Length: 401
Image (cartoon, rainbow, N blue to C red; front, side, top):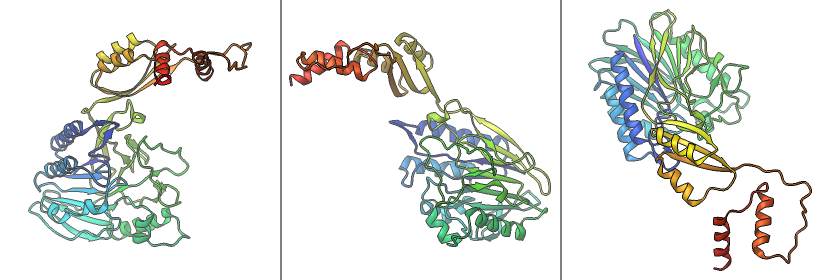
């Protein structure tokens, strides 16, 4: 069977003052197209479905429409879990109606899904944190351990409040008990979670800029050796770059976000993961690139002319622009830059640092004209840089107001 794994949609997210909705509509269309082209039998969406607890109407509408089309109007099961940006109650709310379309929404850890069947598949078994599917045309069951994001309050509610136990031990035992009870070689065994998981002893994986950091109380991050040996593939959400923190034989995959959502992701390529799985065998997976959306770029220039030329040649970008120069930008220069491109998110002027003359006197003569005093002050605070005419005009305007 084939499974499509995607995560971290962050529907409704903005980049500073810029909406990303048009890009999100296009990239959701692309995800749907890949699912159809690959004839995926099952879709997994591993959390951060929305960007905040109270998404706008456009984001909610896009979410429902996308899931409905991914489900082929009920023919293909779709399982979506909540992430740390999502409201579990909002995710759970439409579940009874969503099931009629073959969509299973899981907001809370250890949720127990009601048994149901459609014309094309059925939920044949369900326990807290576990679901088994039997899909038409596939002669073996699919077992899925599911763990949406859990903050400290939810952990206490769902996993207990034994402070002697680390969350790694709690999750490891919970997952192992489910895997030992339900996951054997007669079916495909998957874990999906929205957690900060890494290899024990490995370098800490950086969370994207602007991403809410996952902190489960004071517990350490979750280690990949907590995943039961029966699990053939682990579908993760939270980190926005595609990476396998497991092994070739037992992949533990962050599938990436569908778009670059912060400048820490500048230059990243985005993917969905397509998994080929069958019982008792090592899975294979292929990352399918997503091409929609503007590219995020961090660039530094030293001249206005080069800046404007690059901006005009690269219109389909969002840019964090640093401009190093000998003097501060004038209003006309700023206007020229912004007129050259409609995707400048940040413009960071950087005056080149000039070393002050070591013999320069640091004594202040208060009997000088106030203009000269201001110029001396400005120069001392800005690495020897002189205040330009425009700045002095503004100073005098304020002085004479």
